[in-house]
Length: 515
Image (cartoon, rainbow, N blue to C red):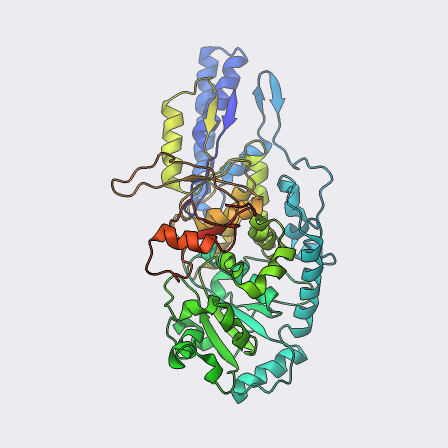
């Protein structure tokens, strides 16, 4: 019996075809056909030589994410218990709603982004439906983005305020400009959070994807773009955006003794620095009393590598609206990531080719080659109890985050999507790639703890409380108490906030149940 295992653990690669798996399958077929030993030997040798040549060719054409050998599997047939098994060329799904219950808008050119309406064919139908209120508000946001998007009349008028240095109130459009920090997983979770903040504050989200994220995603909004124009006046300052920047909101609070009422006129732009190493003044962004001042600033340039959406639920002025948008609080990221992030046609081609060649009958996957090699050796050296043959696959070897490389990010994005097609997901602690995969797939993962020092745990691989990512570094407003008591004080403000399983300093959203 042939079984296929692909286990996700957290890192940033996936599994590649194993020749040894094919050898075992071929030998089993020949033995089952009653071939003589001499003839069997000749055929086996010829078979292995052919695959060796294919393997060498695959090394020559390594620029693709997937090896040539993967193509052989697409048409390869094998027998299981006397029955011929043919790899699926179209996953079976019934009554699939390509608009995801109203989450997505109709009317896009389907050929420009094939994945937008077809990715649902490759996943189990999500039981988590968006609220009708969320769907209607998304349609209103799309109208706002179309009216205020890049190079529109409203955009150009608001841009003039940057040049003049004064807010003159001649436009009703305001913006959140997202700028990247850290790797792809961090970028996706922080973009989703930034969109939620823009959504709540009636702003338009524009993103500075740069060259290393070109061709990774489709445009999420119809008949407009979310890409920040290359001629944006402040773009040359983004690289130096750090905590304490002279134009940051934190610096403004520090300069005015945390009393923004003394500021005579709001500036045309402010930086919001919300990455992991933000200082105490930057963290005051999350105080409700500071949100009113920000409403009067047309341009907010936001830099973050965090999933800060959970803390928006702790800002009183947002709570009622968030409750209507997301009645089930553990579905926030699930809806946002499926709405915003669709693989480009280039990435989608990688996803579907790998799926059809190898994953039609197996639904668990792995990133890290360290785990891949360990699992492969274990199943190669030690037989399973019931005699199943276990195949382990890894489509690429993108071991580490590479900055400034859009091909790496396209491969990584394809592999995150492949992970999201799993039925069972096992992630490692703090894995932002895992967070994105579980959000796309609507999965509650098993979390594999990484031992540190002499510390051990009674639960080395517990099940996550929800499919929401962890906000690793929330603001600490309870300095004089221990970590657990600080988090308990935070959670007492909202019953749908819990301490993260994989990061003791972090918080996450869960189902709204009393403590």
